[in-house]
Amino acid sequence: MTRSHLSNATLQRLPAAAGIPAYDRSRVAPGIVHLGVGAFHRAHQAAYVDDCLAAGETDWGIIGVSLRSTDTRDALAPQDGLYTLAVRSSGEEELRVIGSIQSMLVAPEDPAAVLAALIDPRTRIVTLTITEKAYLRAAGGGLDAAHPDIAHDLANPRMPKTAHGFLAEALAQRLAAGTPPFTVLCCDNLPANGATLHRLLTEFAALRDAKLATADGTGLFDHIAGQVAFPSSMVDRIVPATTDADRARVAGELGIDDAWPVMTEPFRQWVIEDNFSAGRPAWEKFGVTMVGDVGPFEDMKLRLLNGAHSGIAYLGLLSGHATVDLAFADPAIRQFVDGLWAEAIPTLPEDAGLDTTTYTAELTERFSNTALAHRTAQIANDGSQKLPQRIIASAIECLEAGTEFVHLTLVVAAWIAACAARGKTLPENHFTDPLDAALTALLDQQLPANETVTAVFDLAGFAGDHAERQTLIELTAVHLVHLRRDGPRLAFAALGI
Image (tube, rainbow, N blue to C red; front, side, top):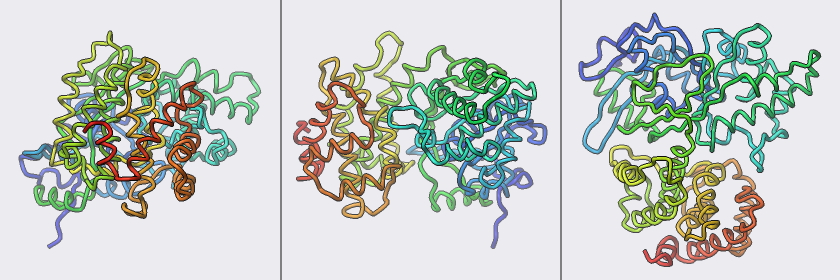
């Protein structure tokens, strides 16, 4: 028997226990364009917007844009943009249908349609979750002007491929039409993400202005630099990849099929710098923290949650643990995380009102959630892009303060060892990294540990030109020797675990 699929037409057939949109979707107007509609956006920002729509703020519907794949559009379009959010804890699961995504566009198929959505005067906020690597930063943190996609967008401004190209062209056309600029709200795990994206986009605009040779002297660079708001934000919610078993379980509960439900945990957090030039939803009514400075919250999340996640992922993979809860249940890894937190917490500002005791207690509960089955391989992706802000930044501050940071450097060594293990003790392509081609060629040489770590630091740009960079390399190399000799067991033993 073939079941119906989730759609506007089938919403009223869902069981009473499943939450459905508490508003008339036909009356919702688009106010947000979101670039990078993945599972995290659908579990986080789209759910917060859904709350606002239910409260009567119906001019903040979302137009979703995929910059690469058609997968999300292909799953959601037949469902009128609807999908199920399954909030899972170790003891129960709550199902809620989210209706805030009104439509989905795929940029490579129709860049003109994406630009039209961005140029629409009703669009007042553009949000982004495109992952760290999509910001196309060079080793020094600036825009990678040599990247072929950047070169393409500079040569073809009306047919862009990158987020930079779409934002720049849309802002240019809005400026020409006299339409106020939208606010650009970055929701990716970048340090000072609003300021970072502002810098990258102004660098792109400067290159664009030079190429287009703006005749009137009022270039896009000046407009973006002075008139466009880029609030920083910090986001947090664990969102594991959806499995076929998840789809089957959700379909059984609903009595209809959902092509792509999203799994998540009960915890969610969003801290936003309150700097919007064209209005915003009243997110604070639904638990969003609106602040003047996101930095301390961002650092706490990056260094305590994300840093611990990276350590759990790489050491978990090397220890044979497929999911976070299994890895965290390993007494050695659990003790290691406590040691990492003890090193990272003193690097956080003391005068920012952060409650690290409560926060780490919440993290302990979240990492122990057996219902999520958050794969260590999923967290392991893109380590070269994530480790600088999650681990290296804390290690450098410890070094400068003269405090211990041996747990932090073990995470870097574990990343290198896990990359080297792919195709050997781990499946090939078990996780990926933007530097994979160069990393694989380097690690296949099986150089001595110190030479390997030095070459990896050079390749990834870790610690830049910091005066004590060599100290980080040497400490990481010691851990790598242990990992190569007898895996995590010897590395933990050297830490007294």
